[in-house]
Image 1 (spheres, rainbow, N blue to C red):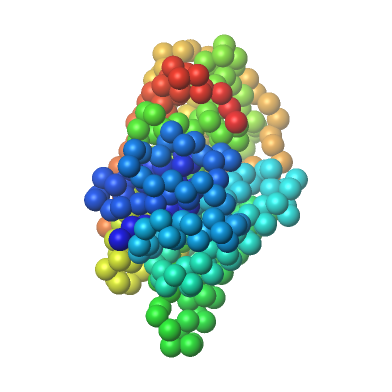
Image 2 (image 1 turned 60 degrees about the horizontal axis):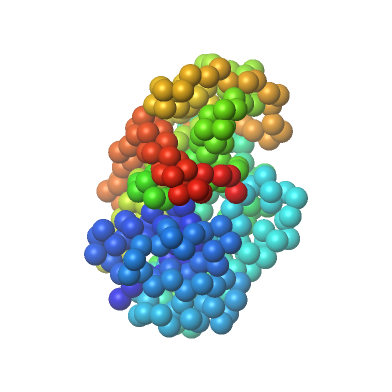
Length: 334
């Protein structure tokens, strides 16, 4: 038996693949390699190069092994870009999700862990976001993730009404994923803070802070940053619960419950790398909320999971992975 990880050649997905393998769980990866990297997939893990929007590709993935469950990460990932290309975002994230769920039904695969996002909340007006905080996505990306949750919910409901084998699922809503659990797996997204800062200091440029007049302790945006290895371990915990037919909630927030400001990130990067710099200050970017921090109490209680990596570990591991990327000529954004 194996779990299918869509997007398993990506930055987060490949960490999840490694976490499953470390627990003795076999994995098959489906990835079109548009942003993922073949070299991120560990040796011995079957890689089906294909798209979730292609029925033949999905069939090849489900036929690659006896699939017991699916972890679904593949998709259009960038909230800001989705505003410019909403239909492409929906094609991949909504239609792709529909086709994937149809494939699950055809192959009687009834365990499903969905990679959702804090983007479903938009700009919450509470200090601490939990799973019951109202959703109000502000981008097609955030909307597509919420629709993905609805699709899982509705499939489960329809099967219950029909008296069919239950569709067991849960959505893990990530907050700001950073760091590296294996130095050969690195984040080079041009839309994420850590690679933007590391690229700048590596190239002799000065990192920028967008806005220093927010209503926060130091005037910069506050976010809940979580180490990618902690995110990966949450997927293992969720999959194990589903495999044991244990009850799970339909959604869990993944974070540390601790807000860290952009300026604190900059200071930590300077301390860890030994490269001193004074960030440039640029105007606020439209739509950036002052603070988004979550409570992970539900995941702690139900999954027996907790984030264990602190800020220094996040920065240190990200820097180590970035240096490795530089050594193999891959330390570039995009």
